[in-house]
Picture 1: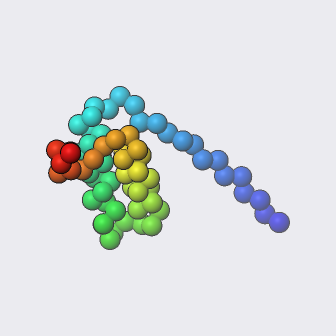
Picture 2: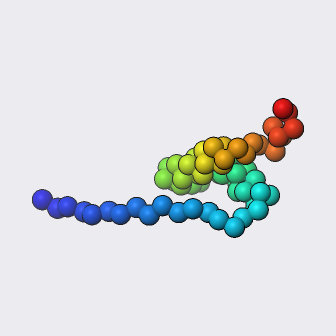
Length: 66
C-alpha cells in the first residue's frame, strides 16, 4: 500500500488596498468564465471570489445599488 502525506498550507493576503482587493475580486470573477484555465484554477478563483464576498466586497456596478 502506498501512502502519500500531503500538506496544504493556508495563506492570508495582507497589505493590499481596498482598490487592489476590488481589482483582484473582479479578476477572479472574470477568470471563472475563462475556458482556457483548468478545473483546479477555476476552483481557486471561486474560493478567492467567495473570500472577497465574505469580506463585504461587491461588484463595481453593485456598490452604489444599495
